[in-house]
Length: 345
Image 1 (cartoon, rainbow, N blue to C red):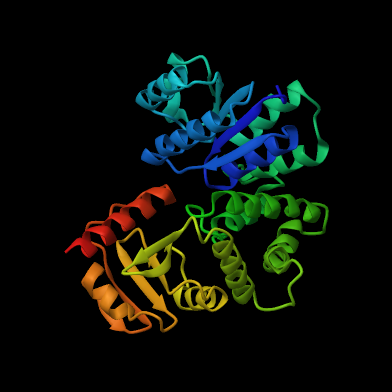
Image 2 (cartoon, rainbow, N blue to C red):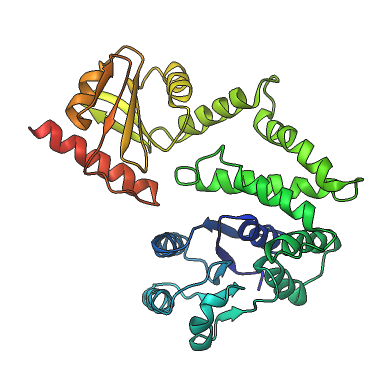
């Protein structure tokens, strides 16, 4: 089965990423996707179908883990796969009892509420291939905390891992899905070095800041974690800047989504990319922030687009017609349309 191209959709918590750490061990050709519950699952599945159509691999496996699907979602997924131009097998491995109806009606839906999804995934693939001692131990740590075995010797270590994933928000998941996935899986892989230390949960807890710095520092001079993250984000934005570019009245800008720390990242990006005139960040709450290096008065831009205002180089407002999305390209399309309609007035 590892000759397949694997499209692995999983949840966004420790158990979800733990499942992906397992498949990363067993598969060479993988595309990772992550989702919370609800509508996002369907949007991520459409992304999988789009990538599958482009790749046209001979063998494809769509794996969904740590996400319970409704009966309606199961039917949608089956129909979309049947209509795809490439053939793909579908497998879901989960432990949420709320998926019982879906499990009873779909043979590709495996449900076991006695183990976390990471353990179900590991047990499934290690039975097909070769068990791995180190990976098995990591799986036991995830299992202890995810199904809350508070008397288990791995429980406290699992709690630290739970917090590690929950607080690893340095790379925006919507804008940079692949870099975010790489970051989280690298952090989880690094945790295993602390499992044999005395009081491993304390050792790992104290090491997390350093693990994050090590990831973002790479070959850069040492600095604060905040500055290293900002530098990394500017590098990512620079790499993808043409894909993320927008224009307003002849001025070129970049659109980000829930970037955070707009003043630092925005100004650093504009300093590093003089071919861009403004920086625009929209959030899931419809608020929008603008930054400029002096080539455009963004207070006027904020007033025209978002009924806002501020300073010539730093302004904000609200895009009242903006509809939140889980897919960056749809956010980009919306903002381009808002700008286009404003320029037509």
